[in-house]
Image (tube, rainbow, N blue to C red):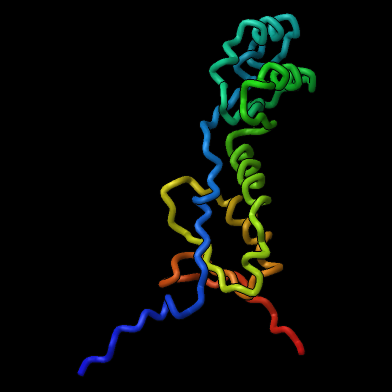
Amino acid sequence: MQEPIINKVAQSGLITLNLEKYYPQGERKQIDLKDVLFMGMILKEKDFRQWVKEHDWKQFQNTFVAVYCSIDAIIPTWAYMLVASKLSGIATKVIFGDLQTLESILWEDAIKDIDQEQYRDQKLVIKGCSNLPVSEAAYLLITQKLTPVVSSLMFGEPCSTVPVYKAPKKEM
């Protein structure tokens, strides 16, 4: 007689957290101020203000926007402020930095709202494969948030995990 198949994963008490569930939905766009510099190096106030006045800001409606300059140029602070003022009420969020910085900030916003107490003293697996782009920043942030409360933290899938953290044994 054959022994019944036992699902050891189901019996393990592991909880899987899929960061994809918290993915900040919305289009990401960027504004690189290098494109509006005189000779690719200098911001001329009159020309810049003209560009700001004539630029189609509606293209950023309900998007996440990263504003930066990809070349080594001196951009006065007021220039970034001027762009931000035009995006106010149009874009969902505007940050200073490139798209990678934008992703990190969006993930930080999403992860800060996760109730870590629901995972207190639990064995948690942070799902590794996803259909949506989950950045390395998200994995770093969720690890930082959950290590104070979980009994163990792993990465991957319940059937094949990589141990990341194990809480020290509590003394009685």
